Length: 96
Image (cartoon, rainbow, N blue to C red; front, side, top):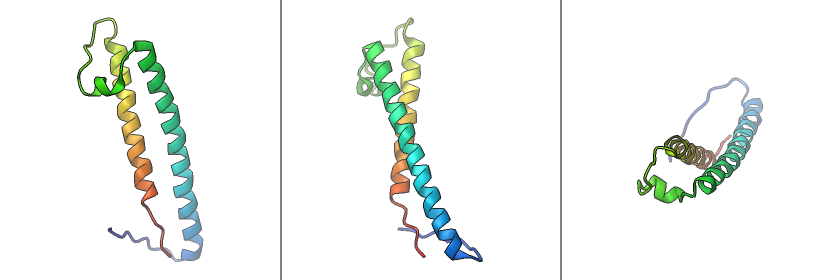
């Protein structure tokens, strides 16, 4: 693992602020994951599409569903990105 350094004149004040900021951001990301996952489930159910098959390119984009399928693909990409961010934060350790 790599280390990052932060230079501050008052580390005793900065450490709790950093820890709190990381936890708050992680909480916000988890809320976003939940909302995005719910949106994916709603879209997939409405379109009667398996998201895994859609991502694998095995779903034909009909003209009447094209925009909705693109929206679902966007939500799936957003969900992947949010989960990556949460995972990154979960692996952070703030060291005094």
